[in-house]
Image (cartoon, rainbow, N blue to C red; front, side):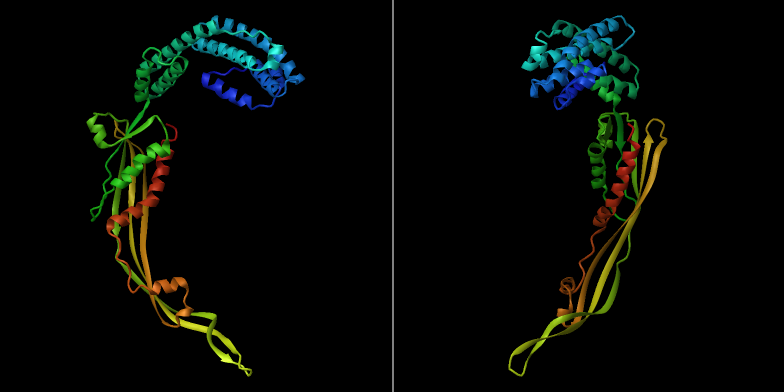
Length: 383
């Protein structure tokens, strides 16, 4: 019989089974007596006279009782099994769950009127399962490695789910979580070049990405100030540098062309009867469009470094560029030949002033941030 290995799994499975339309016959034929009981009970709630569900429950429940007894005896005779009491705890938890579900279904009670509760056995197994998980966590924690500390944290969390507040598990959870966490320091980001540029906004975005993009509870990023104030010994450094950020010269271009529009009312005339008619024709204008552009560009160098050995674990460069542009125009001729966009351009006689280097730098980093995010995501994917 397939049994679940944790309380959370039991709860999730129960929710799934409530929605199940099965009568339990299939699970019964596969030897999954626990699932067969729950499915049959659920079916009898909605269909009290369902013969298949009734038959499945009548067969499955005594088989579940018998299986539980034999499995508990087998586990108790296996002292080398380091998770035997957790398995026993889950077995009794399952049987009590069946009894509760039976008590809430009149049609099922007619078939199994006296289901057994295993309260005393469950509580005894609960204490032993909590201690078993606690000792397993202690053994992991003593190994002194980050992967082992992660396993210790998961074991302490299981202890807390079995008996909340067991011993000093609250403190142990924090200790194991800290030991299991990869501690990364994101160094202050310099911007090399002739301009006084701040990359603080970019550094803040990278910090945010570690919490919103990676979403790994076992990775934590620190600023250099935090690391110094807490005397942190990090596992890794992330070193980012913007190399050779430059802003080019303004480049202006001019383009003159003729624009036309057909079927425009150009006048009127009267026919022989004196009736007035509209005259349609083609109107023309000469449009001179001006465009000014200002290019900026540079490279972001990213390196992930082992703090202890100072060796580079991963490194990549990300080139980027941003071009600011503005346009205006003038015309000679009939303005009706111009489009709405062309008319708007002609309302301006000169370009807007170019943005300062800091603003150009911010825009230049937008695509680079996307590339860096993928680099970070790929590297820390398996942590």
